[in-house]
Length: 401
Length: 236
Image 1 (cartoon, helix red, strand yellow):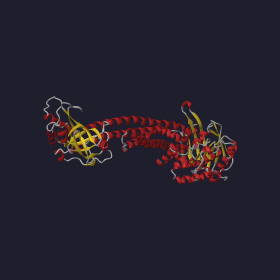
Image 2 (spheres, one colour):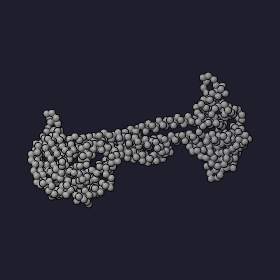
Image 3 (cartoon, chains in turn green, orange):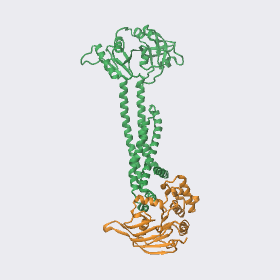
Image 4 (cartoon, chains in turn cyan, blue):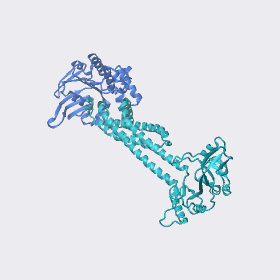
């Protein structure tokens, strides 16, 4: 009986293509809107997560002062870093970070770049990989050897098509050998170029370029947390330790801050999620309106098809078969609408991700939810018209003009 | 004991409405119709002939009295049971043809078989036989809009006989047709009655159409006013 109803319903849909199209268009648009919104939202979330993970996963950055810029606040010593490494649970690794701006010269090419002095473990902590050459070793840091690893932007600007590995460049007043090139990371979360840097052993930078060997010369520390260890706890423990080491007591404010990439990722992710659900809900309303559209047209069509229903009843259709026919018609229409909406959303997402610049992440769950929801709308809004059709009296229905 | 007659009505009444507004459409009909008969029901409008047809066609249930169709007490059946009786034993032809628009002749004819749950192959096979029976074997792809009035009524007849019903109910089957086509359709009904033994009960207001029947019943004011036999039932 169900198969029969389906067969009859499909014939009716085919027989009235224009009306069927008008009936489902609301569902198509509703489903397409929901799926597109949620898919784009997911894409945006992934983009932001990707930006943050470029910095390094589980990355904590320790800086002096509060906020991004600090002047006149004590920097950190290597002893501070050792204390953090050894006394705090969950710290996987820590690298000192010293930064200065110098002009880099290779032959006639000359440009000013950030030079970052650090230790070899920084490459792993900050998620750098190499496209060629090697990173410097602990021994080279120990001996303050003049070597450098350059970013992709620097390589392009200074060397063009020449292989930079093994060449010497001038950094400020000293000369350094290029031993490696980092793989491009592209733009950072603020649109800044992540690849216009030169990484050197911190010893060479501190001794030669800033001239303040020993003591509190570390302007930043890059800390990686152990996988799965709650970063908030690491931040809290580092804060306590440093307050102690820097003699900050009572209600005095911290004169340093710890930036937590994980926390930033969480905040951004959850706010994008809220945004996505909000847009999805608005689109959901249009799906509901689409359902009402189905009910509207089905109700009209029951009246319009009264005679047809009369014929069916006269030749022996039972009320429940007429009910089933109309219900199956509504459900089939809304399912077709749901599928068409999903296809439309697929096309829209493909077009829009290019414009928005986010990746296209196909999420089967939202597609399934949207489809099931549209089928449910078919049942919900198809039932009333179907009841009305089934309640018709064959004699009255046949007499209907 | 012999088999029960096709149709047996005893003191059948039908009242529409209730109380002061009640209208007695049928006031107690006694009627017996034998299997294989071809009966024309005539009468002026408001006489109750349509009500009688609806009751005979199991489309409606009587207010009182009994209606036995092949021994089955139709007055005791509910709506769905009457649907099943129509599906399995009755065929209907209407004045307005009542074909499904934008649907091919073949699909129109196979419609009753769809409700019987026959498989596609069997449906098509039977529908083609029925169409050939009414002389429209070459029109199975045509939709009603592409057929003349007479051809449409033939499709409707094919739809009515595709289930090989015991009885065919025809409500003014030629009301919308010209006199030439009327003759063709009545010849066709006569042939179905004679050659295939299908009992036919037909409502008409034209004497000429009624003359094709073997028996003519006049209804007036909710009662049978005359019952004339043109031809014996077994005169095949």
